[in-house]
Structures are given as structure tokens and as C-alpha cells.
Image (cartoon, rainbow, N blue to C red):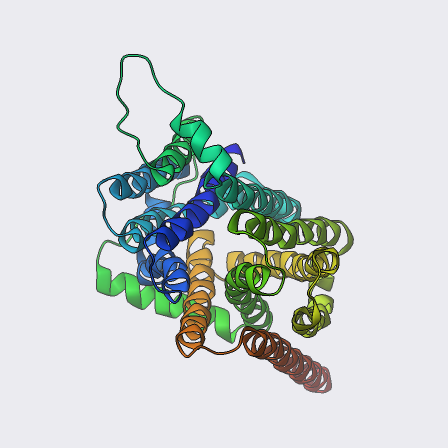
Length: 412
């Protein structure tokens, strides 16, 4: 849990340090969503391979290697490699990390403890997003950067001269701390059948797992919901930053704290649903997704910070409340239908494909100079609309299941 927390903390702080770096380079506004897009790219490209890699070595070692890749990505920025490329390398590390961090849960715990464990991991991840967001904003603020730049090591000339480099040093330290925790993760002793090495077979196997999960009546609904949730969440992060600047006239480091407020709501919602919603009732939360989409549209009417905070907390609570049961249900179905590593790889692939798609659409809207309020309304309406379609699909699945059960009874 500690390893996961610090690794994710650094990922999130780094995003805002990189956004600030793009701003100081006078990069066009459409590059900001592309930054997150470059991070997510490897999740999609490597989806077929990282599950097998995570199952081939002890999970703690996989996480350690992944953290070192992230550190390497940070160091590239010091050598004036473009932030988009450097952040893509960090994304490569994160893609390798992900199946191991979730896969280790199913190795350590019985199924009935998975919802609680997921609640903890999700809760800590959300905490790391809140603190990482605020930390990233703080690291690039004038006060913090002047303090960091004034911090001299005796004898050694660090060669750190810019606010960005100073902020990056802190991020690298956090990654190294996470790597130290990785070294202390015991080998769970879980071993899997010999892992396939042939890329073509891995891709075929991955496609097969993907089809299995999408055809499963419960799997498809939970996969559709979590896929939509992560795509919407990534885009909302950037919309809130822009909205804080345009509608609320906040500076960048203040705007990042608003992104943190949404994440705080998610934490509250996630904790509440982990307590209140048992696995078998997990599908009752879908209407909250529709409500979330509609409430997002209210952002267009807000110009005061005092209204902004409660509104964003509410959006966060609704999302957190419906995503945790869906995640647990998805992992449960994945575990029943295939191995943990494989089902998480399928989940990652779909969620990150959704993030790529939504961020690409957002980047296009910005390039077309669409009014921010128009973007917010389109975003909220599409989230609510897609959730409504998922709800209809689930109802149809239920009816089909009930009628099949009746036919079965008549036969007997």
C-alpha cells in the first residue's frame, strides 16, 4: 500500500509540473491534453504483454523495475528532452506497474476481502491524487521554487537552476522512496503456468480474454461503467483546471487545489460505498453515474469559488460511490473467468483507450477554439447519455436472464 501510494503520488505531482513546464515553454494549449495522452499511450499499446510480465516475476520485483523506469523518464527532462516524450516514458513505467499492484491483491487475499482491499487501494490512490495534485501545484509555485532553488548541498554542485528542475528533484525522490518500499514486498509464492513469450500468441490470448469479459453479462456492464468513468475523470481534471482559470480567475497553483477537491469527493464516495454496497448489489449504483453527468453541466453557471467547492465535492462523491462497487465486481468476474493479471490487463486496456479517446476529442475541441461552457455541457451530456444506455443494456440483460431461467424451469 505504501509503495502504491508514493508511486502514484509522484505520478500525479509530475503531471502538474509537466503542465507548468509546457506553459513556461509557451506551448499551444492543445498540448496539455496530449501530455496525459502520451502517459496513457503505453497502457493501450502494451496491454497484451504487461499481464504476462506481471505474472512471470514476483510482483514486488515488477513494481521495483517499473519505478526505476519512471525515474529514468523524469531524468530525461533534465537533458531537455521534450516533456511529451519524457512523460511517455514515465507512462511506460506506469503501464508495467499496474497489473502487478492489483494482481498482488488476489494472491494475498480471499475473494470476500477483495472489496475491502480494493477500497483501501482505491482510497490510497485517490489520496495520492489529491496530495499529488496539490503537491504538483505547490512545487511550481513561486514560493516553493525559490525555497528549493535556495537549498544548496555542501560540496556538490547540483546543477539545478530552474524551478522545473527543482520540482523534478522532489518527484524523483518520491519515486525512489516508492522503489524502496517495493523491495520490502515479500514474494507471495504464487506461481502461474509458464507464461507465453510469443507476441502473436499473447495478442490472440489478450483478444480472447477481452471478448470473454465483454460477452459476460455482468462483466460487460461493469467494464463499460469503469471504462467511461476513467475516461471522464481524466478529461474532467483538465476541464476543471481550465474552468478555474477562466470562470473563477484562479492562478495555476490555486486551480490544482480544485482538482484535488474533486478527488477528495471521490475518496468520500469510495469509502461510503465500500461500507454500504455489498458485491451482489453493486449494479444498483448505475443511476448515480447519470446524476454525475447532469451535475457536471451545472459548472457552467458557477463563477464563485464558494459555490465551486461544494459542487466539485458532490461530483467527486457521486463518482467515487459508483466506481468502487463496479471495480470490485469487474475484478470478481475477471477472477472467475480468467487469471487476475489478464483481467486487469483487459480492464486497463479499455479504460485507457477511453482516456485516449476522450482526451483526443478534448484536444480537438480546444484546437477548434470551442467556448469552454460548450465543452462542459457536451461533456456532461455525453457522460449522462452513455450511462443511461448502459443502464438500459443491463435491464435488457436481466430480462433475458429471467426468461432463460423460466425456460429452464419448464424443461425440468
